[in-house]
Amino acid sequence: MKTSPLLCCAAVALGLACTSMATAAPMTVSSSAFSETPPFRPHMVATRPPDCGGHGVSPPVAWSGLPAGTKSVAIFMFDPDGAMGLGVSHWVAYNIAADRGHLKQGEGQKDGPGITVGKNITGEAAYRGPCPTAGDVPHHYIVTVVATDLEPGACRQAWLATS
Image 1 (cartoon, rainbow, N blue to C red):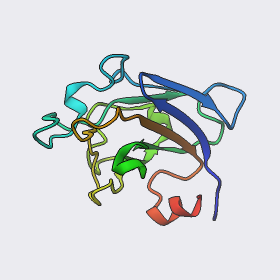
Image 2 (image 1 turned 180 degrees about the vertical axis):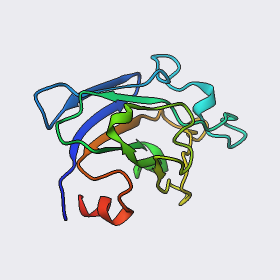
Image 3 (image 1 turned 30 degrees about the horizontal axis):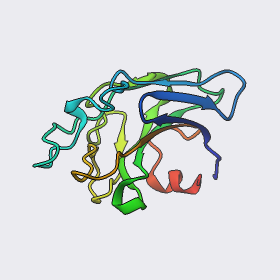
Image 4 (image 1 turned 90 degrees about the vertical axis):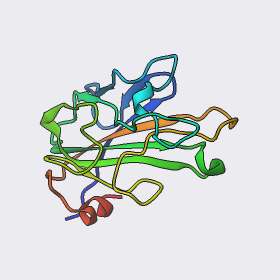
């Protein structure tokens, strides 16, 4: 059964903002991990030396006001400035029950109870913290929360079929 996901996008640069595209009631997305300065807490950045030296911990993300019929959510984190402008996928997390309302810090690192983590830019199914090349232009990070009517536990093919 092919379904169309209900979408809400949250842009992350110096904070989070969200506008609902599928309902009159506002869907909200928030995270305590983002602030105006610095854009990322040190524990969230990648562990790759020598530039970053962080712990690569996935950020907490909370959502509310999901459209009627939402059964699960997915979270994506993308850097459009990475890979010389081709973009970098840092995080793909899905099969998250909508009624959870949030993921705690570090909960989206790898597959676990109630979450499936997809492949990042390196092909690893894990969260990959930000770590732009030293001296590069500032990077922007887009966190997208997708509200869908797919049941939690749907396989990757079910998610791809909604695109």
